[in-house]
Each structure stands twice: as structure tokens, then as C-alpha cells.
Length: 337
Image (cartoon, rainbow, N blue to C red; front, top):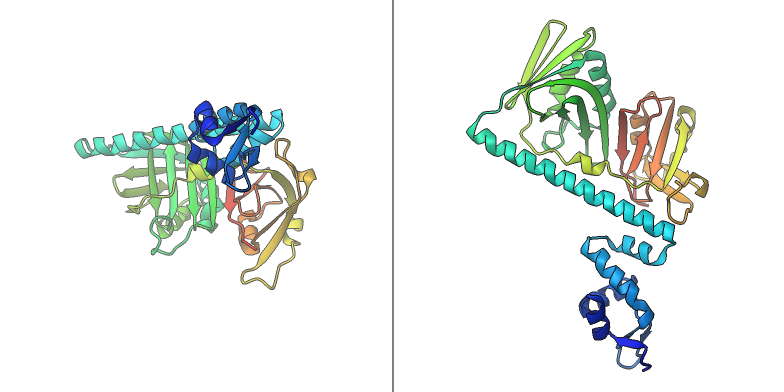
């Protein structure tokens, strides 16, 4: 062998990657040796591969996924920088999640010693009604799935987030709220949420009170109370962090005109995105086909005259947004074909 080639052990010592790690990245096609001996299977690396190996070691230490490492090593400088920025955002989001979870744990520990005071929310009744209507289609009524069977209220000062999911789709809507008391979240059974919606028809303002496991809503001189569901709702904030590659805009007429695949087990529609629909920072723009439940898509669109669809791949969640309602959007899982 020429002196410019390094064995796997020499490359491991020089790069900070173990021989086993180098074999793993070779098998994954991310960092392959310059030569492999046909008879012995020994891997040999060229000297000029050392900078990439050291770069890979750094990316590995910060937890970058395989696909991202590959794009950094093989993409253009602009693509590599975009990947680094995207991973940094993921790390920052993860730190935000960790802080929020630890804050919740502290609050739960404190509540064992000191009972939590009730939280009161004052919200515009029409805005709350619109938010409930916007997410209701995704709320299952099946009590066999208590972790999702209802509408989740997540309150913080200035905003009330309403979330519903049946595990195939997820809907989010916000409305302004004045908070009196600690931030709080509560999962309301679907029937209780529907009853709360019925109070809002002629009201201008509504008051929501969460006191322990009890929920109360008052509007237009009427009130109702009920028990919240004692179950952990999925961490919806993580599900909202998408990395779309294509964006297409459809009118209501175009949406209704999408043909139905009658040969499928469920009513399926195929969405087609072209390179012209690719976002500016999308890697290697290509055509993209995404199959979705047509009925679910129409339900999510509701009465909107126009909607924007953000696609991130044939099996990634599809985001459905509304130019006229920036405080509302939903996600829909595609159908594998």
C-alpha cells in the first residue's frame, strides 16, 4: 500500500472515531474508505479523507442524524450551512422542550406540598367558538383512547392553544386570552368541549376556570362544569416542527376537484408537487407525490376558500394552512402506497 493510505485503526486514532464507528458509517454509505482489499476486506483511507472524518466526529458529537451528516459532507457549501442551521434549531427546540418538561415536573412536585390555585382565563367568546370549530373534526370521541379523546387546552398568558388529534391528523387553533393564575393545560372530554361550545353562541366574553381536575366555563349568564381527563396528551409542540420541501396553494374548487382513487381501501387523493413548488432551501428539488385520505383533507379544509399545503416527503406529515386564518392549521399523515 502507498504511504498516503491509512488503515482503519490509523484513521480512527487520527480522527477520534472508533474503528466500529467507521465501519458503521461505511455500511451506511456516509463515509466510505478509499479502497477495500478484495481478499482481506481491510479498509484503507486516503490522507485527504481525514478532514471529513474529523468533521464527521464533530457532527456526531452534537447528535446530527445520518442524513444530515451526509448532506454536510457531500452537499454544496450553501446546503451544508442550511443543514447546520436546521440542526441547531432542532437542538434549541429540544432544550426548550426540556425546560418546559422540567418546569412542569417542578410544578407537580410543588403541588404535592402546596395546592395549586385555580387558573381563570378570560377569552373573547367568538374567538373561542371559532377555535373550537377549527379543531373539532380531529377530536375522537372514543374513550378507549383517553390520551387523545378530547380537546386539549394549553393556556399561557396572552394565548389559549386548542389541540385535537386522532393520531392520523392533528389540528391546532389559537385565541387570545387573559390569564389569572399559573399557566395550565387540561384535556377536556369531547362531550364536555361540545357542551362548552354550545354556551358561546350569543356571548361576547367567556370565562374558563381550571381548578384541579375540575373545568368550568361561564358565558352569557350560563355555566357548566365537568371533569377533565387525567391523561398525558401527546407533546404536540414537537409535532409542529416540520421541515417542508414543497409548498402548493389550492383553491376550494381545486381541492374538491381532486380525483378519488376508488381502488384504495380508504378514499384517497394524490397531491402532486413539482420542482417549481420546491422551497428555496429544499435540497435537490424533485417531483413529489403524496397520497392522503381525501375525506380527511376535505374536513380539514372546512369552508376555507384557499389553503396552503406544505409537504415534506411521501411519508412525512402534511401541513394544511390557511391564508385567511393564520392562527389555525392542521397536520395530516399521508397514506403509504
